[in-house]
Image 1 (cartoon, rainbow, N blue to C red):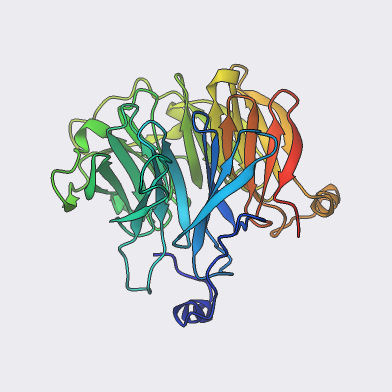
Image 2: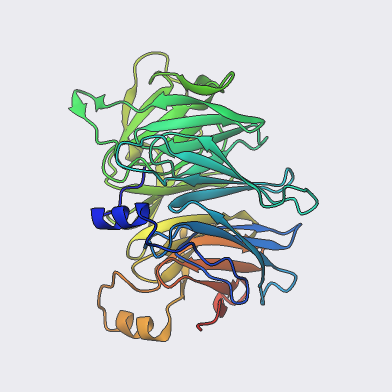
Length: 394
């Protein structure tokens, strides 16, 4: 359930005062692009528009051809519900998975997982299917064998079998740890550890958690299947506001928003807990911390180039981190000229371009969405410079 800050907006949306998002491709219409996915084999860029500013009654998926990766061409657009979250591309099977938090009202606590057909040879190309989920689903990760899909929701973590999305198993995150209440309203993102034995669940306002994946059994049949909290092996203290999560073959990377940093964690020695949940300090796992910019929000691991990219939303730049040296090596500004001038004056901004989602094409180009100004920048990974921003302003 995605609650609007102003109830008047919700009432207007229910009354159909907002028009549907335009599905034109000349020019394409973007509206708060929250997620990007790239298919090198299909030469496509998939852009999920959340319409989080509520300009329309719905969001959309826009498909761009990357036959010329420096000149993406919009090919088709389809409607999806507003307030989408993260995306996962199963290129081989031809599916795009998207979490979605759109709800009818405050009492509606069952949101959805979307599956979109991206197989152009299929008669169901770009058909959008909707499956039951929990409240406020956002983060996504998938086992390397693509058999199971994990989703973070409010106070819960879900597991789906990709072959049958009609049911999901649910691990409830503990509401108390060590006799203290835990705030679970902002458990938004998650990520598997390098060996896929554990699942890290971030928390914007309290403790983070590690779930033992083999103990979080896959669903059998349809509907919601409760697993309780026994699969939650560790609660992690020493964090304030953890966000996006990523991994390579060595480390788990976690964004910490307060203070702004990237935490580099070695979790190889973690073992399943035979007994009650254990409380551990993040310092026992930490290899390094790397400073980030203002409001770090999304990360992307580029193992082929031994790099990691972090979008810093309020600073309007991308941190480039060398994963061998474990240090910042560059900063990529994506600001428009007027926003760049504001940043140079050292002023905090809440409504700049707001760099957000990231996606890599053929280890050559990085695509970065502007959540606020609804554009996408293309960055040359050899020069680490923005070479184009699209679509053009009307």
